[in-house]
Amino acid sequence: MNTHPMTKVTIVCEAFARESVLRLVESVGAHGYTLFAVEGSGARGVRPADIQEFSNIQVEVILQPPAAEQLLHRLQSELFAKYAMVAYASEIQVLRPSKF
Amino acid sequence: MNTHPMTKVTIVCEAFARESVLRLVESVGAHGYTLFAVEGSGARGVRPADIQEFSNIQVEVILQPPAAEQLLHRLQSELFAKYAMVAYASEIQVLRPSKF
Amino acid sequence: MNTHPMTKVTIVCEAFARESVLRLVESVGAHGYTLFAVEGSGARGVRPADIQEFSNIQVEVILQPPAAEQLLHRLQSELFAKYAMVAYASEIQVLRPSKF
Image 1 (tube, rainbow over the protein chains, first blue to last red):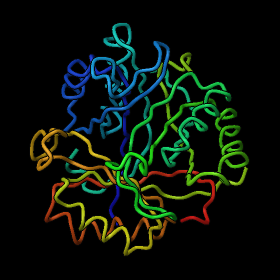
Image 2: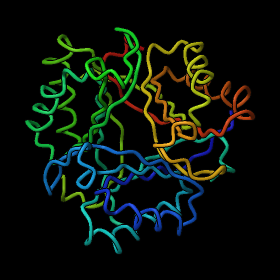
Image 3: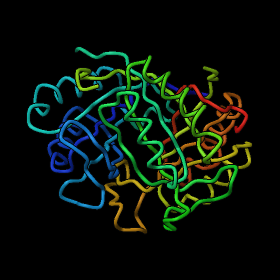
């Protein structure tokens, strides 16, 4: 089994931040992402998924560790002050690393 | 990059357990969560997401490790006998730990 | 707290692959899974979740490590050539391992 260690970066943010987040994701060299709507509560209150303008999204991106580091750094320096947002990294083992 | 080790607790359960789970999540001191509908099959059979009354939800909560331990313990002792439910923990590295 | 190390296998694929993936998941002995629709972009372009025929799904399966290894191997040998698909494994700590 050829699996390769990669980093998954998960970003939970208000839907309003979508374009800014995806631009950053693309700019660090990600070859893909998944995105889905979530309900959630956080520092700015409960955000029901069925009210589109207040909904949150969860974006998951698989990256080589240095690119993941770069994405987290840029989220912090460029977007954290502007949007309700949480970001975290986790280690995964990936098949077909050539896709990333 | 200032990331901090935290624990993500994931709870997959029948939608009917929602209020009980969120009360527990709040009572262990979580500052937020995400929640989304999932289809799934498990011990009690396939649960399609488009039939609301039989749907499952996936709740994800980021906690300091001791609070995560407490949440898992209380899920087991207070809710596992009542609801179809699976819970697990994973290690993550979080930006902005002051939010948790 | 009795938690047990297990492997979570996550599969992101085009919705068209759903039945093939779930058959494989079942055949390696999984007792359950969760499945939800995601938007995503990848090698074959952006796939919006609101266009059903082009949507992606994310399937998550909790398995004993050898069964996870078997699932990844069979995804690679049987389905990767046919479908747009990414698969990865992560380590989790599970309550109620008897369910898996």
